[in-house]
Amino acid sequence: MTLHLAVALDGAGWHPAAWRAEGARPDRLFTAGYWAELTLEAERGLLDFVTFEDSLGLQSSRFEAPDGRLDQVRGRLDAVLLASAVAPVTSRIGLVPTTSTTHTEPFHVAIGIASLDHVSRGRAGWRPRVSPRADEAAHFGRREFPPLKLSALSALPDPATERHVRNLFGEAADAVEVVRRLWDSWEDGAEIRDVATGRFIDRERLHYVDFDGEWFSVKGPSITPRSPQGQPLVTSLAHDTLPYEFAARASDVVYVTPHDREEAAALVGEVRAAEARVGRAGPPLRIFADLVVFLDGDGRKARLDELDGAELVSDALVFDGTPEGLAGLLVAWREAGLDGYRLRPGVLPHDLTAITRGLVPALQARGVFRRGYDTADLRGRLGLSRPASRYEKAS
Image 1 (tube, rainbow, N blue to C red):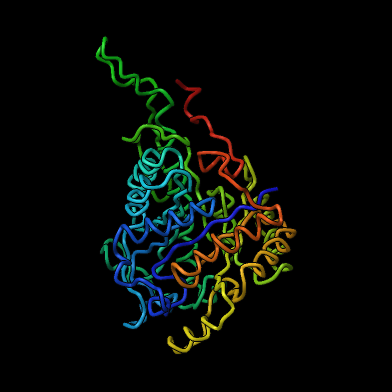
Image 2 (cartoon, rainbow, N blue to C red):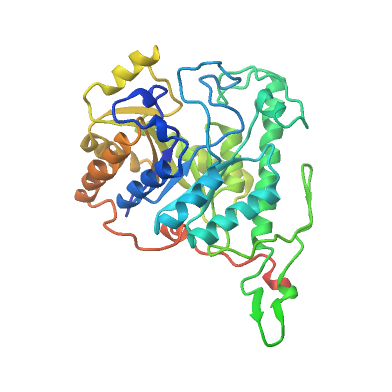
């Protein structure tokens, strides 16, 4: 069975000092060409998809608030717009931008991701995330959030913080449901474009979604015709029970963060248990493990740690070794029930190139990775069928 492989693109790489590494391109971080080159390299390596990180606040070494540091990369391009810019210069690789469900209207997200699916001809995905920080809420001025009294989502000791985060995940689940309904609100073939009769749209194939929940009241329909995949791929990152249940309700793919094979097996079990608790219908979640990777084994990570003034700490395993060594780890961990991996290159473009030109050939030699793209659409690549519109029977 083919092992699935994705990369998470963020700034100059996942090490905070990556922008200072030899070969890094900090002067190009805010150019479309930089991201196009990275994505094309990932496509040359036959990877399933790339994800584009995003948030509504400046990057920070602290989870709960800005850190005020000026020696690390700060600033981003909008992930959806970036993916749309990259789409026309690529042809096969999936494009999965991140957006916040906390301060972004689901109607805007629905038309943005559907438009990306049209532009990419069926290669779009979406990673929804919550935005719990008070400084992010202050950018919008419509809500006031309490200060977060925790260092990571995996522990929620403060009742106010726990309540706040639980509410955000409830809102996020509603947001994804609204987005999915809007994607279905145009049936296939709703645009008839009949010049002779002057009818462009078949109104009977457009539907109100009439969502009325705790967080949103959305009538619809969307303004964007149904996209090539029908339902673009939805992915999410999860570290604990609440995010696992969110993924089970809302996503097609979940990223988990084990640190060894035994923990990988335990997390797969937790994800499957979450699916059962929420009564998930349809295909089971595709489970990808996240790893931060440094692929040369020459001490480069240690030098970057010294530049940054601290050893790199991550929610995911930090692998520092050779492509062949990583290939062995990925094959061994797959026995835990993982469907694939999302790799976070420590330094760009160095570690991305090591993935595509070192790791991929090593996996191909083991017979566990493709030698060519077999499907054009992202859902099909992961073994997911194209769903019919939920409103089609009502027409």
